[in-house]
Length: 82
Image 1 (cartoon, rainbow, N blue to C red):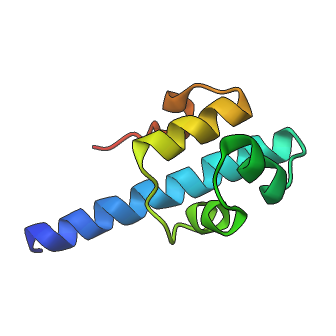
Image 2 (cartoon, rainbow, N blue to C red; image 1 turned 180 degrees about the horizontal axis):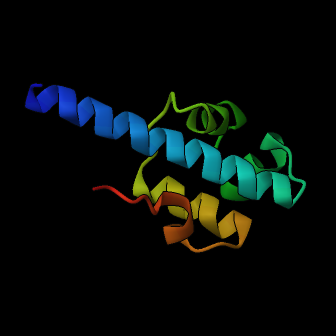
């Protein structure tokens, strides 16, 4: 496997984790994508893309989403890689 393929696999794993984490926290707080996007200062379609793993958000945007959800940034991006 090439280094680039490993990078793509890692990137996909991280995106999938973010999707689950953000959606889970959002669901627990009974927030719609639109409500969370407004609170975080991002567009609702961008947030949806992050949740589906189609977008790779910047650290700044992840921090804004974490703040809007009242969770630690580490809770959104923590992933156990071996």
